[in-house]
Image (tube, rainbow, N blue to C red; front, side, top):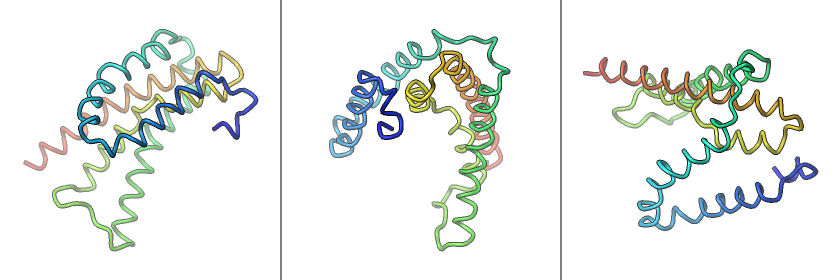
Length: 165
């Protein structure tokens, strides 16, 4: 990211992002640390980060602007389409197969849930977007996409689980 956005790079943002990435690369080699830090990161750090960087700055009046709507469409439709299509193609044209007990219906549900991720998108948006109004549109778009993706993904996976019984 620094290569493409070096003029607008905020040193503090880059430092904590780089530190988090470095820690992320080191953690897989330390199973006990992962077991301890994972719930802390999932249930404390990420919600605080999202609250500080997203929820406290939401402007719902921007929900129907071009950037917001594009993000919702890309994350809710594009993510699921890309993930499902990749899994479908790979299991059809290569020797790769889904693990036993997993079917494409569940891959579809995971694809729906993929639209929920927003921390990396927020970091990139803060670095890349020159105008505060653009950042505000990204924030509301990510929030709406996360809500829709979460509801659709959980609903679809619950439906798929009931169908398997």
